[in-house]
Length: 363
Image (tube, rainbow, N blue to C red; front, side):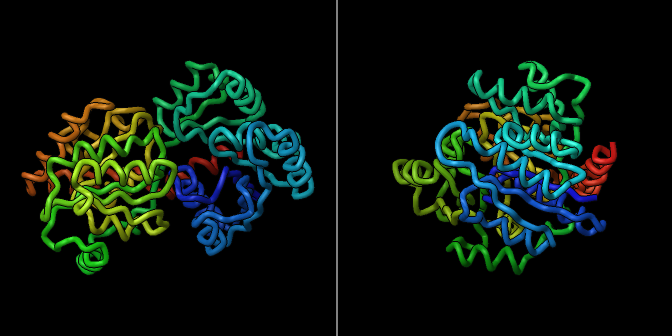
């Protein structure tokens, strides 16, 4: 099959990494795969990985500002010329601009919704129009599917739930890599490291994580926040304001997630809203215990008291208590981590996810 995936950008985010995993496997199965990026000409860090996987990368840039009245027409011209069998959009902007052109070009239109994405009513109307053009509308968790139905974004008959998968083979305990990354960051080998990886946007609520971790931090307890985005400066400033900047590390954006997970002792997710976060299946694959806010699809993924600990959204005190509990119990950390890897291997493989999408592509 000739397949196009449409993304807002090639910057590092959960939806982008899921698309990369699918594309890698589609190419390996012999399909002709193109990534259409709607970002400005400057590539994000994942563009090189798509190319290395054998994916053709093309850009049809959305003009800055609000609604771009020309983008759908430009996409339609490209899609009609290329004659794709499948056009697979990810998240709201590609849904709005590419789903209708994809269907009109003669392709099978498939959409993946990676999170709730509350929106102004004008944009919701555009999303509904895009969803109406799809042949299949995929939610990455049941909670995301329920939300889409609750706001009448899509007809129930089109909704499918396909949970995200990850390349579990990339996430292994590696003592040498653990030591190297800690040395690079200036973290003692025996320190307890609370870590997270992801886009630094308001919905991820990194300030909650900093506030919750702050009372625990010191020479033998560190916080590592890997990622870039609009909230990066604010989050660093908060660490300084709370007096823990020497013990909080912000390496910036990365496409090499396994490298940093190897250095962590616990993975923390403090979001206010989520779909089914790829970062959690990656952390489970790396045998890390989880401390998370109980939002979106997270409670379906994190088995409370078995693979991690959950707290209400916005609750600094409970989140901090969960971190402290793991810091004080290496045995609990190890038990949660072992069980998490077992679950990841059994339920969250990228091969299973890709096969589920291929079934939808075939109709």
